[in-house]
Image (cartoon, rainbow, N blue to C red; front, side):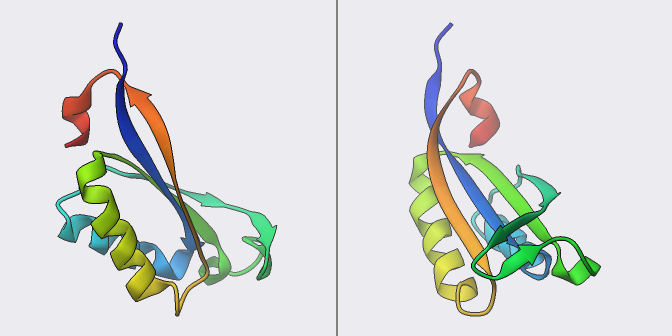
Length: 101
């Protein structure tokens, strides 16, 4: 069984930024992603314990490398100033590359 190398983009952000992140993905013709609410503690203190708009979400996207740089740059340029965001990229292996075009 052969694994194909692709990228996993992970964006952890305050819930108020979630729509913005998803809009950027859509702008770059990326429609597949997974989101879920997360709790944690970081530079902005403990998050996810109070009001709905204080929650954090994680958005994960498996994608081809050729779209990655533009997406990451747009998220950084348009959202880093106004939202608490942690963004990182990992190498992952998948069996079916056609799922991540």
